[in-house]
Length: 369
Image (cartoon, rainbow, N blue to C red):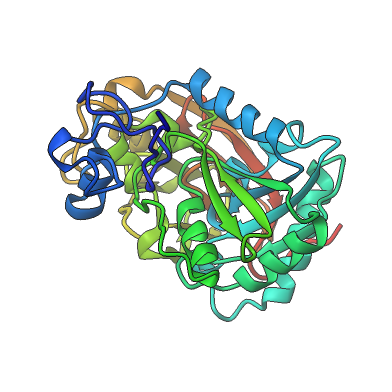
């Protein structure tokens, strides 16, 4: 008997285990080709409880890499640190392309050519082998999809399979939706704000049947903020509402808190200027630097609603950092803050285990050295 697959998440459809991947009630079997979990995400915005463990996800990703002649890495423009460097070792010796997705979140005044030049240098500094192409895309707007398909065609022989790789919530499903729409396909993946929507390997015909695209479950490396949170809280970090750009003047001894997830205080002796880029749903609070540690640990209700699932899992790390003007401090899974005007010493509070990166400013003036 030929297995049926959920057209949304790629799981094998089954009616035996309501708690397992691909469950579909027997009463609708044959009428619908989408599992109950995907149906509830699409129509009710519910994430459900079905999850793959990290070992199962890695197994499926490496299976797709083995089956594919060309690889496409989908990275998140708003979280380069958390979604791009981790792939450098996995694509060694392979033909691969990079699609930097969610480019619609970039400030409209920033030229795409400037961003592309920056990203090429960012990749060159972190990947030993360079990609066949780097393309800016938007799974929401459809921007760059035609260019991506053209570059895939150049890099891949007819009949070959292409593995689509990415961390959770980089927008792979939205991008596939645009790719399949370009080929007039009626099949569509499930698109949601929740991490881990794709559970199995899904095959999609692209370029009018010339090639097969293999979609994979999103990896959760464990060092992004969202990897430490429950699906609902992690969903707040998805930049569906856009990136919030705010300019802050921070006097010595003063600081800001970003939601319940980051505190940064001016540890220098002159006013500092920071530009923040984080998901638009998050809250900010100005406060004295000496209060930040207590506020993050105890979570006063006026700051942001406490989550009983996430709060016990977060432990806090304090660190002293120095930022030169026109450099970014990127926090994997959250966004970044950019220092302007002068070099300043900062004290930082962030969840233990989250990856940090200091880099030249992604937006605006930067040090080119």
